[in-house]
Image (cartoon, rainbow, N blue to C red; front, side, top):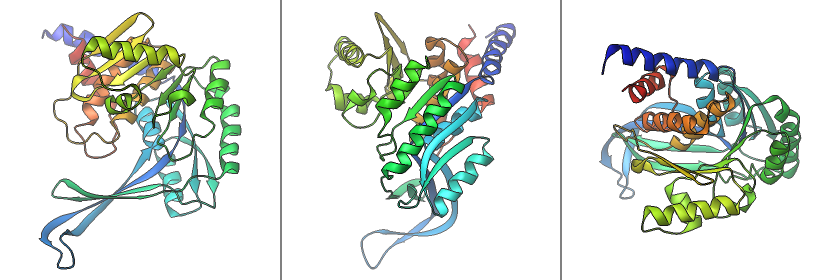
Length: 329
């Protein structure tokens, strides 16, 4: 690769990141606190045939929609986050971490629920156990969040709806309708097998297993394309992006298919990769970049983040280097 070509590619990538700095992203969805307990495993418990972990250090990270917001903010976008937390220590911790990350977090506090927490126990670089604490938010907290959404949508460039199936997006159909009437693109990271609630969104980003759950299995690329286009038109989507792990990702639009091969050099942990992908898409689309360009950047970002442990972010330097290498002849 010639130095001049590399320099030109890097400058082109820098111009994209400069544009992202003007992007205003509104993230709505289920937030959670990801807690990690790291330790050594040297023996089996005498009480039951399970390993004994001697915890040596702990970490806390933003999870769910909060991780989406964190990833978009890490790329330079201005981010507003709407969600519901409990009146408890994890909720307070989430609020503090979001403020530290430079995110405008507008959290509805619901005293009747516990903030969602995912606790992972790690021994010898392997996840041994995950414990989830979660409660569905009350209707009044969800209505307050919907009111906040309707007030905030006019001052954003793109909306990201991060559905983790925790009950925080019960008004998602209304949110999509409000955003579309305001002429704002709506990106949805879906959950479950009922996609009718996402009807009218601009873009859906299911992973391979999530897409298989709603569309069934396929035996060829032709069959996959037919299933994807049927789902896209049936839900009145502008585009459908299926993330396919080691096979990369494929974008389906009206009369067009774009496949981008995977770029991951090493896969260590796929948790949170979908957050990084949709955050990158939103940051670029909010900056006025094309759908094709946003997908290529999201693919590069996803390839970087799967090489990290747990929910993580991609730095601008990492993404700059990846896109410069990808763009240079």
